[in-house]
Image 1 (cartoon, rainbow, N blue to C red):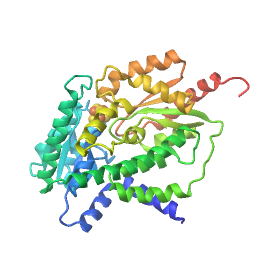
Image 2 (image 1 turned 90 degrees about the vertical axis):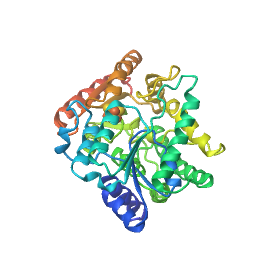
Image 3 (image 1 turned 180 degrees about the horizontal axis):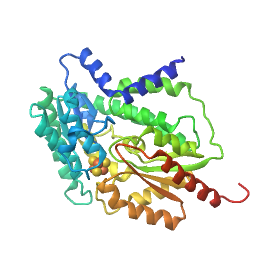
Image 4 (image 1 turned 30 degrees about the vertical axis):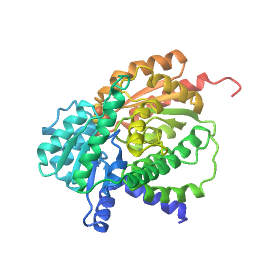
Length: 387
Ligand code: SF4
């Protein structure tokens, strides 16, 4: 196996079995602490600078069993999976849980962890979600400062500004490299499959950024540009907080589409915004948070001059996508509330689209296949006759 293929295999292994990776880290750092953080805005740089392994808690894709008792069935699959991880002891790999976001379902799942795991530290320190308010900058800076204090207390150490600067640079470098791959895909390179890209980003959400960057550099060093063929070019949109099932990504390409860009959490949404290394580190954290919603708008934030629908139309133009597939986790309220805006904007622009609601358990793949085939057929009819 070549060095690049082995590196991709290593990233894939972490993405698909984070528990083993965390256990290996613990063996290598017997005094170290592992902090679980919930998506999508916690600045892991703070924990990294304190010597803590910060993991964005993934949906471990196990069926929800005992966790059913703790959250209503109409909570999204990700939050019910988190409750189940806590209810069945699978949360034991984390020494604590920090949350910086606002989704009501996410907060509910953190409360379940707090109730079921009283020995683990759970901290809710929410970053302001109303970004157009005149006090947003001040509130963000205050919360970043509080998060720093809480991380220091969790780690039992203080965070040195130089260490924080170095952590910011490490995460930036890793995000930059991933962004280059995503930009190359939007520009016509299809050498990475959507499943490869998901594994690359999902592993970044778990690993140390330097370790991830070293492996990803090996992967990138061996890649050759592979131009698009005549398949229908599709933008994938949505799926906040957790990864869609790999089978779903595969079936989209099996029916005659090629995914050219996305705004998924385990995709471009994670890596779109970097931090400004020329600023004082705490200012860089605050500016990063304020700029994330402009770099790629999120339906969990409110900002009057920024819209996900406008961003999506621009992204479709940039990548020359011909159709959009919305992947919406069932009961994801922020996505459900924003979806009509997305639908209207794409309809007005004449972009064919399809909404697929994803379930946590049981994926009706054949039904999805039929609906995707219909979308591809419809989109083909949009192509000029000479194409
Ligand atoms: S934003 Fe959506 S996917 Fe994320 S926790 Fe909230 S409901 Fe679940």
